[in-house]
Amino acid sequence: MDSGLKRLYVIPDRNDMEGSNELVKEYGCAYEFNDFYAPTILDSIEKQEEIIEYYAKYRSDFSEDTMHGAFLDITVHSSDPLIREVSVLRIRQSMEIAKRMGLKGVVFHTGRLSGFRAESYLKQWQEMNAAFFTELAEKYPKQQIYMENMFDEAPDIMVQLTERMKKTENFGVCFDYAHAALYECPHRDWVRSLAPYIRHIHINDNDLRNDSHQPVGEGKIDWQVFDRLMREYQIDASVLIEVKGCEAQKRSLEYLKRKKIYPMEQ
Image (cartoon, rainbow, N blue to C red; front, side, top):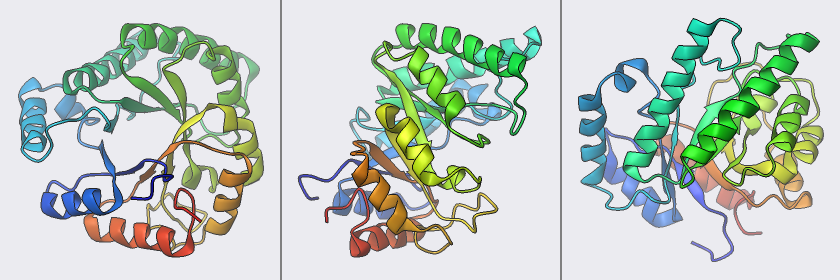
């Protein structure tokens, strides 16, 4: 791996760990585990330990790795206390797994209702998320917490949250470029607005209409634009190739390397 290369991540393939480890070795990747967000896993310590023990056969140190935390129906900002209670529980369960494994960080989604911009709703989303994630970051100081844009049509609400939490050193943005590409807000506005807070990036390709997680370079996203924006705004962040399977990951990495697209060296 080139010395100037930003840290790359791939999702390990439990059906082909030899292939995953080859990619890790060739490109200097770390892992982002995608096994622990499902409720059936979160509710079973035994299943969690089984997965962790399996990965430990192939990896002795998880300290540079990350994981995707619970995101299905997670709304810590809900006005319904029962929904809020379960959402908080799932996020705390995710953080406990990360702490047990000694992971570098955990990715969570904003959980916003797409397109719903009632002032009272956005204020509640910001206040409740700021309070909750500030407390969470203090409780788990050894883990980075990344907030990922999901059904967010523009970056402004995330910017307001991260501005409010800028003194929380282990909280930042996971910028999912493919998610942003599904909306009309210009890519430059996304990157310019979030640039000071981006610590982790998810990339994959799509048809600009559906979040299809195609290999990078095999959809309609213009990756030359992505590259220019990353370099213009001097983004210094780790990058997950968020596609499943070693073959799709390898095609994505080869495309990035061949085209010299961020985070590859020019």
